[in-house]
Length: 301
Image (tube, rainbow, N blue to C red; front, side):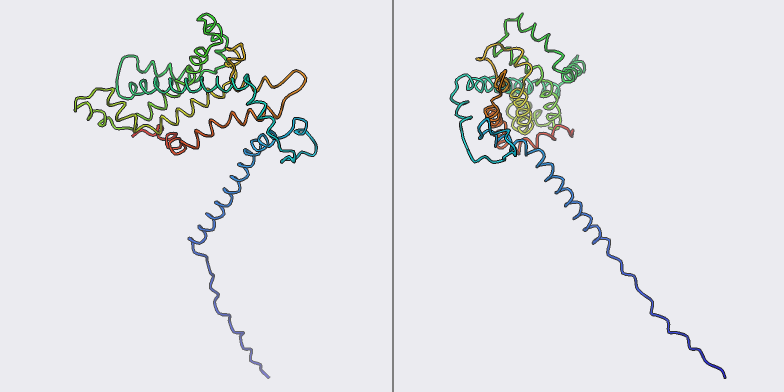
């Protein structure tokens, strides 16, 4: 007896479904954005929490700052630290000195740097390369190495413990950066602009102040903010080149709150917060100029 074996029916061919490349790429981009957002949030918290703690501590009593467990927001909210600082003429003088020195350094640095940058950008003259090397070299020298020479120089010139001594000293460190940045910015502006003004009979100064400077406002603002920050926050030379409290600046005033046996932590935090306000205001008002000016000088057309 023979049996017939019928073959099992073959299964229908299976189709492999693949995701479109565009969908896969979109998913990768979303994951990348999520990762970047998480990293930015973590970085912001890491950078911002010390500032928040400083702000919170400025409203606490001095004995409450180091209590355990720490309390981020105090229940005994107080303006005593701010009242003490703003009610003390000596401490207010620290702020006045910082404003006088920082604003003077910023204004003088910008004026000198604009003329110097215009000359480097628009003219060829003997010694131009050597001057450029000197400017870069001064910018590269660590300021602390010049502390003793500057101290002797200021004493010899009878500028020790004066506004003039601090202003001239700070300008040594702010001018190279300002000249380099503004030269790069002026290089991005076509020379035809000032040449057209000269054709109409105006001079180089007219071309500079009426044409180039208004266009270069973003670069000038960014350099000005940077210069103000350097002068406002400088500590080492302000400590070395001043002797009396009527010439001290804010960073030195904060350091003087560290006594031999106790520290006035809440007043230190309050003075630090008050010291942050000028720079914060500058950023808020000139933010759009500052961001544009930081990169404009790095590209040469």
